[in-house]
Length: 189
Image (cartoon, rainbow, N blue to C red; front, side, top):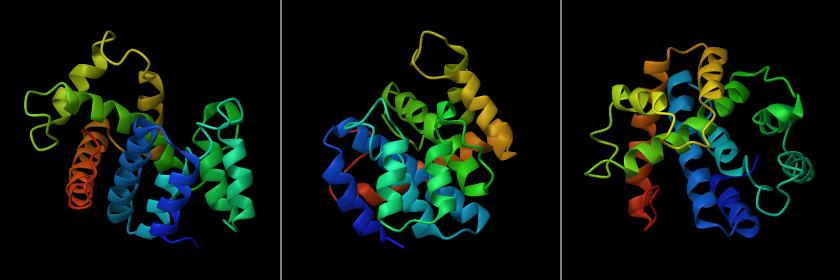
């Protein structure tokens, strides 16, 4: 199993875009939050969050299947590989594990929550509430590229209420932001 620090180095070798790196860090924070909630191995879920879009910049047309091949060669197990492949609907790979369903549920929502924070006067996770996120979900002009149906479908597939899902993610991303700031990084700056 690759460590979190090794995954971070691997991500930086393949991804240059600051926004994509922030997205991977946001997904990582959400995965760690859910690992805590579900009592799953935090480092494994952290590494999955960091590496799920490993190929997106270099091979956007083959994403995430190129990443799956790279990760297979790095020695990752089939459950991990299926989670990476299954986070994109177009692959047709079923999400059979809790880990895969969680990645699918947090991927789109992580970016949406960051967008919600960025338009808040205090630009802070602390003041963000699920009610505000749900209001933005209903606003089709806000973050137009986000697939709202996918976010709802993913929460249902994971078996969590949307309010609970949003709150779990806000809490996890707030903790993630605190950790990142200690390292001179941020999800929102």
